[in-house]
Length: 337
Image 1 (cartoon, rainbow, N blue to C red):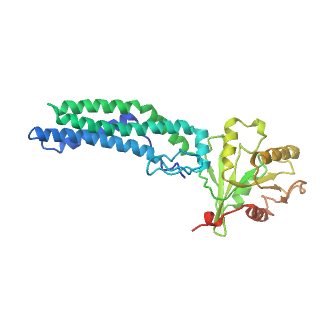
Image 2: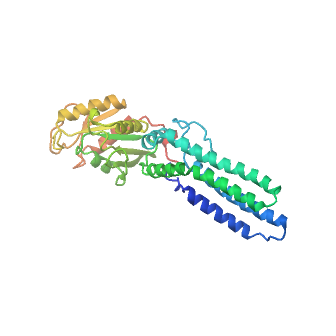
Image 3: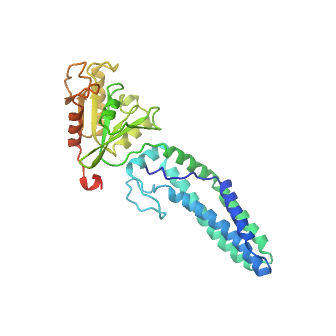
């Protein structure tokens, strides 16, 4: 997943401590015999500290993906940055705010560049100074001020990193989004059709988990996404964050499986279930298959395209076949190598 590789972002205090300790070791390795060797040692301290700080700050920016354009086509401003798929760009915007992320990353990038610039300036001053150590201490003071000034940016980025790493691992391959009221059999379907038990990922937009299952057909890897807390209640009962998360799912969803329970043992009338169906149709505009579940205890329902029982397994494979046939896959893009 695109955010898993983001390392912990250190505080300004941790960065300064690391760089100054390394600088002291760099000086310790120099033999000071005359003014020239003293100058060399002080230069080594300054350049070591500056390089460590600059490299660390630039690396922080580089480890975050490129947020410059939501369609993921823009070239990264920093060499080494990975591009941001539209799905994750939208989720990141919901969770931490893409504009604020970019602003904080720019501040850190600025600090790294400024430290390099300042180190070169002070190295020149040291060569013309009577006491290079005094100038080096002045440089350390200026560098410390720069790093301290971005401590808030570093802390914001570390908080963002911790939140983003909790996002579910969903790729941009063909995906089936499973919808319907609670207890109609959504999770049971995901578990039955997946080659392994579905992954239950932390989903920051709702108190419930997001179930992501996978299966392979003709060397194409498909995803089955159950969305508890998002697509199991009417539009007017969802908050703004949930609506944005639903919008993000449109980037990966290729077809919707809407499951109804004609037996109404789920606790909701068939009328309410069909009302929710109409709302989801308007919201997504994707191909949809309506399937009546629990045929082992109820009669087939009107308005359903197919019937199945996730308890006995009857009809489940036929439903999956139909869903796969409805997905407009591009084999060149999706087929496993």
